[in-house]
Length: 163
Image 1 (cartoon, one colour):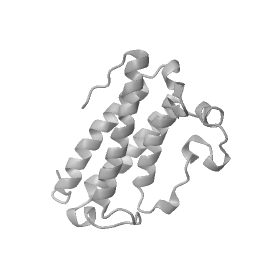
Image 2 (cartoon, helix red, strand yellow):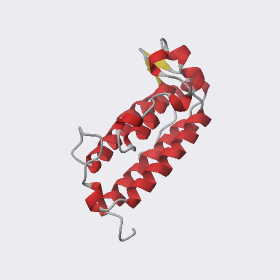
Image 3 (cartoon, rainbow, N blue to C red):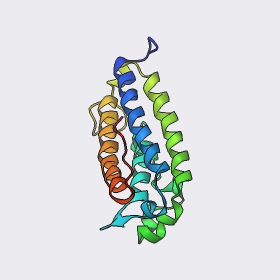
Image 4 (cartoon, rainbow, N blue to C red):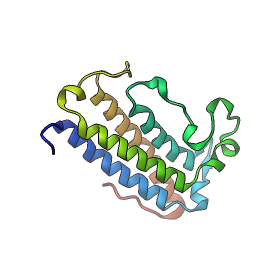
């Protein structure tokens, strides 16, 4: 750990690294039947995209600059049916590339923060600090990874290891 990197930032990065490994496992082990799996308006591929897109959102310094759906080429305001308007746009390659971009961004942010900046506020006014925002995002990712892990185990007998 660099002396300018906060202990909290380094520990947070360790936890994110584990969740990113699980995300890569999910993307890599999803055949077409799993990728297209849906139930009661819940979509496997869209949930993976949602995890990554939410990392994009919260890794910014303000919520105002996010264009939801842009990376996959859609606009939520135009979506009538996710199964026909979004799912055909999502591929394992798109999600893998998007995830790598978010890993690079979040890693850069977390290793560059000292304690003062980590515990300061940014444009996400509903969080007490940047630390709180990144902790929330980690919990969000883990929640959805649990859903993903369940579907992988139930449909293709793939067991995602807790890392």
